[in-house]
Amino acid sequence: MKKPFLIDQPPNSEYYNLIVQDASDNKMYGITQDIAHIDYNREVIGEWFDVDLAIKQLTSINGVTTAFQCGTYICALQLKHDNSEGTMSFYDLESFNNLELLETLKSNNIYSDAMLNLIQSLVEYMSKSDLDDLDSVRLVLI
Image (cartoon, rainbow, N blue to C red; front, top):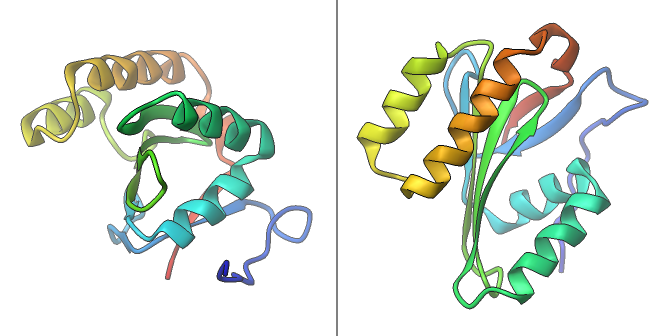
């Protein structure tokens, strides 16, 4: 049974509110490994995203690892094929120096080179945008 979360979303809220289990004090980084939180966040992000992710899971033996833009955040999602385990991490480009973020991720050896290249391309793409225009997401610590 899905856990219900009573968190305001647009139009009742100015921002899309995504759930994390742990976050830095200034919300420049957030993470959740709770599948109910990840499922909730997938619903908030949108049906198009959820369907695309489900298709990738069906065609994968081990699971899915991907990164995408989510407001001013880069979201890195790792999800097992059967949805039994996963990690959803958020990195706020308004708070991180772009090179600092990439160096931190490389030194922590969390992601593969292919994933780091995807994150780097997102950083480059987002750095060309006005981040104030993208500021539509907040992390909610539960």
